[in-house]
Amino acid sequence: MTYEIKVLKPNVAPCFECNSKDIAFSHYGHPRFNYGGGECRQCGHKTFSAMGINPTDEDAVKIWNAQNSISELIDAQRRTIQASKKRILELQHLQHQRQ
Image (cartoon, rainbow, N blue to C red; front, side, top):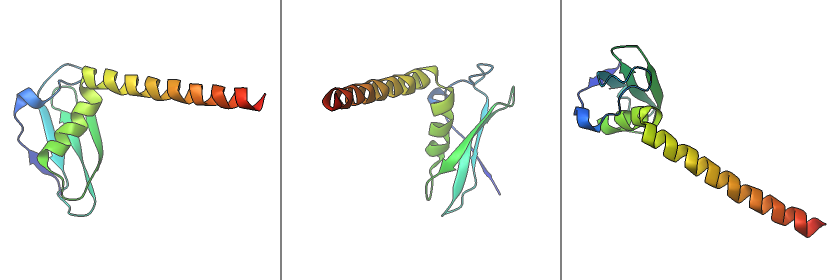
């Protein structure tokens, strides 16, 4: 059983595929295991993920936004790049120590 959520539109990233803001949010509402996210009503693009115990409606919006907000996607890629650069430096340092 899923629960559809009513969300204020300004907090919702538009669909990555078609740019629509007509998104249906839902989650299973189970107190132990939960799965939720959103589905674009215009093109059918879906973004769902596991949710924590006793999720809030905003958790479903966060799941959607994390995979559809271009600025959030850019920030995630920047964090990945920074982590990769740090790891490269660590490995180079180790390589230098072992020579």
